[in-house]
Image 1 (cartoon, helix red, strand yellow):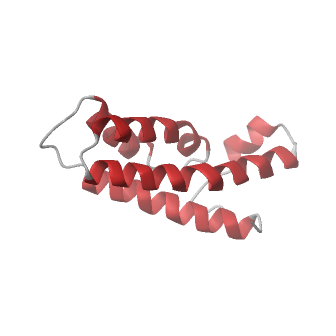
Image 2 (image 1 turned 180 degrees about the vertical axis):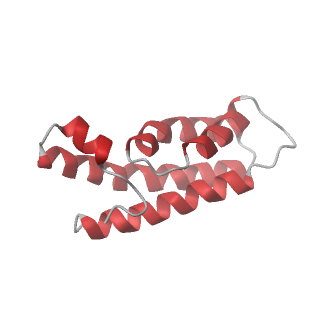
Image 3 (image 1 turned 135 degrees about the vertical axis):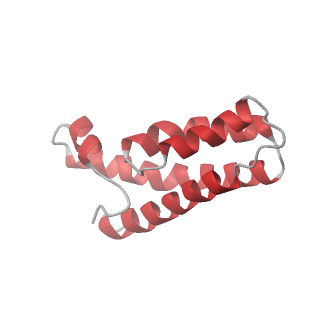
Length: 113
C-alpha cells in the first residue's frame, strides 16, 4: 500500500472522512489515466495546446497523491504552453505515464475498485 502514491495529503484534506478519501481515489481513477492518455496522444501529434491542457488538468491530482513526477509533468506542460518545437519531452512524459499507471494499479488494488 502507498508505494507509488501517498495518501498523507489526501487524508489531511479529508479530515478523517474515509468516504471522502474513497471518493478522491475513485476520481483519480476516473480522470487521471484518461488525461494521461490524452497527454500522450497530444505529445505524439505535437498538439501543444491539448498537451498543455491535459498536463495542467492533471497537476493538482498528481500533486495531491504525491506521485513524485510533478516536475516532469510541469516540463511537459510548459512544452505545450510555450510550444517548444524541437524539444524532446519523451523522457519526462514516460515518467509521468509510468507513475500514473503504477499509482492507478495500486489504488485499484488498495481500494478494491
